[in-house]
Picture (spheres, rainbow, N blue to C red):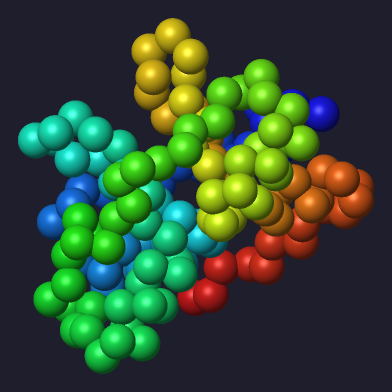
Length: 135
């Protein structure tokens, strides 16, 4: 099975000036564990994960003052849609992370995100049950 078969095409993109609280609210509303951080000044892509937000709060930092850009991973390993899930799992294991941004090989635009959960779901054949959004 390939990354394109497992990835989520719901890509949350935020800017580096979003606060961590704003990022967390957007991630929660869309039920995603990571956001692509696009810095228009550098034209670079980074990733902010739920773990990055948790680490900041654990350090006592104020999520209303901390900016996403200060907690973004910028040395990102990207996946191609034609990678096998084994390739993606190997990259995650070697890098110690749980999400890969999937890039279009022609224009290098984000197509999706693949997570460890996506891979496990494919390998086990278990469909994710998504609860209804809270009122």
